[in-house]
Image (cartoon, rainbow, N blue to C red; front, side, top):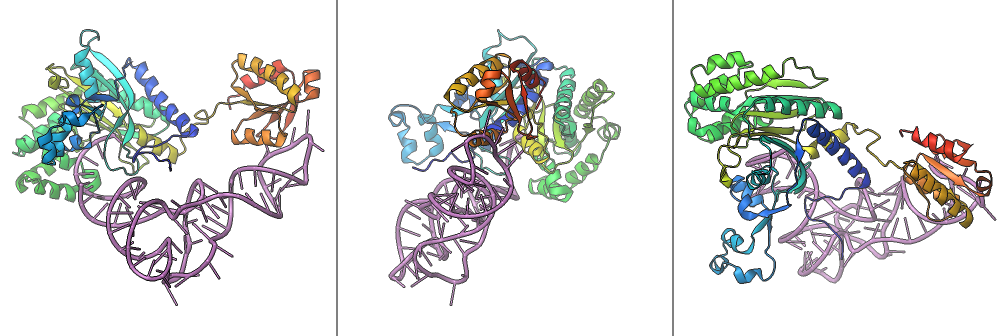
Length: 451
RNA sequence: GUGAUUGUAGCUCAGUAGGUUAGAGCGCCAGAUUGUGGCUCUGGAGGCCGCCGGUUCGAGUCCGGUCUUUCACCCCA
């Protein structure tokens, strides 16, 4: 049989894993620095935890896990006869793969309410699964990197989450623009335009501005049944470039005033904005599709890239309500790690540390020197140096070729004269030069090599 | 889920209007070079032409299905 892997999944080579770890570690260390604690949740959740949380589209994209054992014995036969897949699913599948990290987090908070401090700051870096059609940069299995705070309405968290974005992307050497808006402002716009019930349609349309342009948004809103007069009003308001302008346009609207006040507070926390290369921007056209956001919303856009958003997030009032715990507010952000990886790869932003750390390979000429070399290797490893020995004392050409393939920067050549004198022949694989030195000197030299 | 698109050696790709034994470059292996990798030269291995079926005397080539890839929509990270 010919081996294959499921659609939308990937194997990762050592080179890729080094780079992915570099990226995850950068994100993780900033999360930790800001006081966020790690949690992990199962790849499988009960289907009842997942269904209905992501809308109709989301339910369709959920991976369901078939029950163990004789699952047909429990099957809803009337649904089976009627070929009603949706109804049948409930009787043959009780578990599903997690679709994101936010819903499992909400479940976690409710289940462990008495064990966790409040406010609870958590980060989580784990894979999630979606049965979406794969495309470039979009997979059925991918990692999410989330940080959320629950149990506080303080805007200080919005401020620090923005700083986390800033610090991570600065560390990665990838200049970005962090866009900020507020869902209450969008709600106010819908109210002022006279279409409070069509807030979702409006935001979904506005969200596509980057992609389809102003004319496209106008058309989309019309198609979604928003009257022409309202569309005109919305466009006029979205022209606002500053909070001051917006304030005038939304004057007298309670929701608008609240939203603008929140944005003011956020920007006050972040003043002065002292970033090395990243921008912070108020953008009234930032909408974010997800419906559960209720306050500030964020989105990160690469400056030099035509790749959509590299991260997003926002505040939600009622994350845990569906699990029976009302009025727990939260705010969180997510890094689009797979996309960030692609951008960094394209721009060659991964440093050389994000690679194989093997520094030294021992190559011996015969059985006797091979054993001697192994003892030297043991000493070198004791000193904390990443090293290995070629498994057999075969011809040197073969051993050096292996060193080359592994990109080992140094090879220690161990023959009779080395064994007798204790002077080790050390070959620099980059320069092609060779020198003779004692074990201690060799260890010192290896320690000083950063690669 | 809708409409397209891709699949030939490990990789990137040729393959002419259906016609013997399917090619190239790179990579790989061996030797030139018994204690020296990369460069060079010489030789070699490696393909159910994605899979299943159909048309045909004959299919890598045409048709249908299926899986996969990529793209646009939908949605989203």
